[in-house]
Image 1 (cartoon, rainbow, N blue to C red):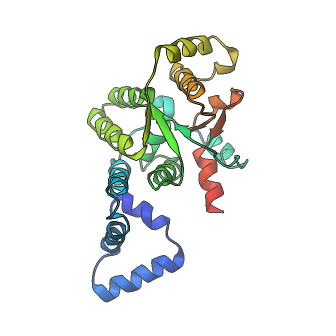
Image 2: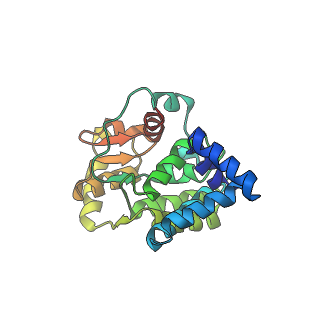
Image 3: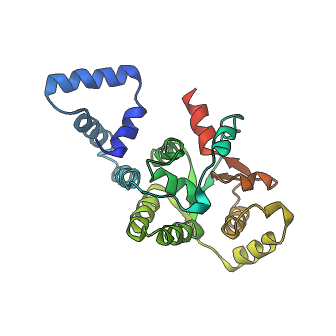
Length: 234
């Protein structure tokens, strides 16, 4: 069974799974085949949604063997992520690059949470946008760990899953330079300052990210994938 199908199975209730088992025994078809048929029937009349789900399957099945060093997640950060419930997401949130990469790496301790986030976005249950810097980060970071081809596939899938793509303007760059000088962003990488600039100029106040550095920034809410996933599971 593919990683994507395993993820789909984990979202089923016990009753739904038991029904699939019965149908599988009666029809002689695998549970994976039945799930695929259900997806096609549900979204066959919506080509755009079908493309998003196909892209989600592509992303979740990439099986990245390594996470770039700058996006490693400590056990302390994981435990912190489920202690406090976040405010419900309102409007559109910027999706950080680290979430996308962890969602493509099943061996990552953040895989369940990040795969869930990507699935919520693909199913239009979570509103998200990316900026050009997210694409550059992914391409550059995965190139450095010798995963160039998977970087191309990940970005291709991401562009299908996330409907809004913000460009970076000269005023974004100028604001990012100014932000980099401020003490509040000392824990944030330069790319994070670009994200904050894009968010400010596009009226966004939430970012979906594993990076706790954003917690220091006033008027910005970091939506931690671990927290979102834990709250949704309650």
